[in-house]
Length: 172
Image 1 (cartoon, rainbow, N blue to C red):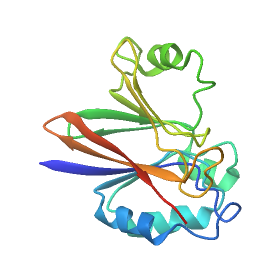
Image 2 (cartoon, rainbow, N blue to C red; image 1 turned 45 degrees about the vertical axis):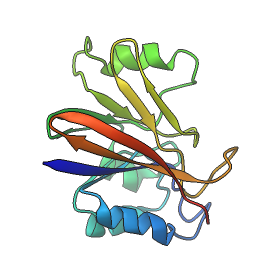
Image 3 (cartoon, rainbow, N blue to C red; image 1 turned 60 degrees about the vertical axis):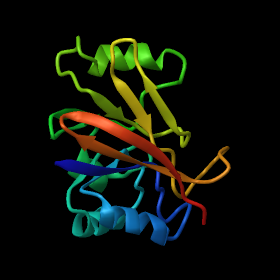
Image 4 (cartoon, rainbow, N blue to C red; image 1 turned 90 degrees about the vertical axis):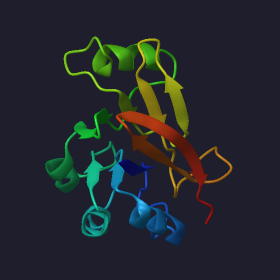
């Protein structure tokens, strides 16, 4: 079996954009699991994704209000075909990120995972820590900040392994 993931973060609706692009909604429809790493801003997007995604995993971010925090919380964990996935919004600055994430989520931690999806910076990130933890930040589809265009990530999980991870540009 193959599971298709869509990774999102920092949508900031409706502050940075009025809505997600149709391209992103098509990716939602194609995905088996949609992961959102926080900064939704409006609970209406959570409601819409819950109604449309086959499976949704998400966390609240620093720009999210009490209604989103009550429904989502700070950390989400899910098993996708044997791949242990954790989701948080913030991991701190890029300097020392691998060490910090290894300590908190890596194989030697109390509750280890294989993949950590995070957001906050709006800057795509794909690395593997010395301990083997894969770190993925999809950027933002709606608020590109210093990036040429907005982005999301797609990924494949098959046979208990994370396969192809693709950074997908989301121009307006």
